[in-house]
Length: 290
Length: 239
Image 1 (spheres, each protein chain N blue to C red):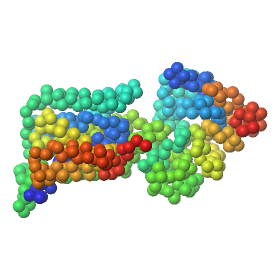
Image 2 (image 1 turned 180 degrees about the vertical axis):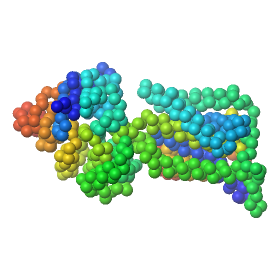
Image 3 (image 1 turned 180 degrees about the horizontal axis):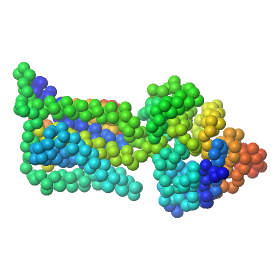
Image 4 (image 1 turned 120 degrees about the horizontal axis):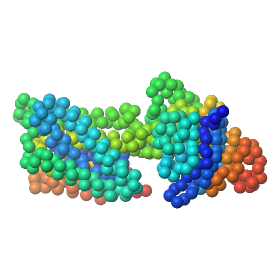
């Protein structure tokens, strides 16, 4: 029982972590909140089914394609919607509202293309369950955890060890100084939105085979990913990962040991507790105006 | 010989506010020139527009650098041409280490060997930065941050560096060290233009100077002559 719960906690936790990372990147690069994360995740899952199941591409190829398309989409949204608003000196809250509009367009657009019923993401591996001792689990669950963690690890390497990643962090810390170093800040911000969308799409393709794919898949998970980001310390990349995994575990174990009635309450009660008592989150990200 | 940097009848508008009202200014290759004046005279606007860091909508007149017109170019493109800007208030990347900050200075370069040599040059000029190589830049003292900001500009192997108020908020002894370093950088061949409110040290350091008042250049001469000028003495050197 414990290990089964641990696995499903880590599955949903790594998904929250991927989504939360996207929130953090957008907040750091633009100082904004994007409500699109969840719906881009849904779109990623639908695109995944399309490429993998309908077009018959191998799963890794489908995953790569979906990620690339989503990165391009995130980049295009930053350039086509966010940047023009920023250039007009629009207040942040209005830009956040624009992201809500885009999120509904993506969600309803998905509904038009793929319909309203839950689609079954065909299994990726030949076997339906893995048995270790008396614990059995879906191989897709293991894949979700492994690939999810690997992506988070890869992102850390990219942001901390590569020239482009470091320049993106620099641009998010001080745009003017970055510009004077020769960094293309506009490109860098677009890339942050692109990567955030890419992460969300990966999450969609990982969770699709486990939860099934439907138009509101990402709506709930997106909001919980947001809670994870706050719990970890909004804008902190390590915080996003830790917050996501923590929330996934607390939610799964809480549901099982306390009551499943509260499943969807846990994330938001926790969110409120953190906002009231520790808004800086686990990793002490700046939350109070000095 | 054409100047390395030249402003021709340069004006700047912030909406309806006429911040700079038509100035002419040039800096020859290898020169060290200062632009002095009181707060709000338009010095920072001038410097930031040279570097492409203000909105191009407000610009009138022409700015030429290294034989090309740059007044409509973006900041990162001007950096790529070899004109580096050390911002007022230092603007180091606070959560990046000293080393990462310097690396960002060499962002556009691909010559690994040259970059390595320039790291060495920066650390030779500012040994403090070597000691603090792995420290987050936000934890440095004001003087060390100024060294880092200058070192970061050096890492681009620039033809010219413009500096905005390098003495701002620093203790006199630290200011002295910073200006000695700027002089050394100039001596090694980098053309320099700097804006400074501390007119005394500015006129003691640079070759030539411009005096700016409410958006206009009111006086220009060699620094020695400016320092001896009665009006300059009264207005900027404390009698």
